[in-house]
Image (cartoon, rainbow, N blue to C red; front, top):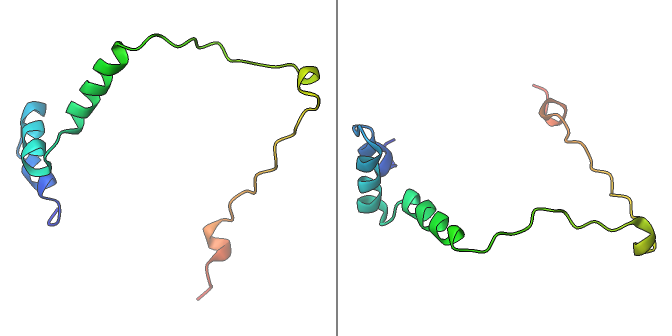
Length: 82
């Protein structure tokens, strides 16, 4: 908390409006304003169809198999023993 002035300022707030005001004052912007603007912009955009585009394996010539994904090594297995 000692290094985050916004966190210190909003600890005493009781409403989101107060927290937003502190954010604008301290940071110069409000993340909530950004989200509001983005929502307004998206509302004005034409809808995008949600139907996935698929192709049959015969139309692509060959079917590719995804490469295997290596599983992460548990941290205890890589830590040096003391």
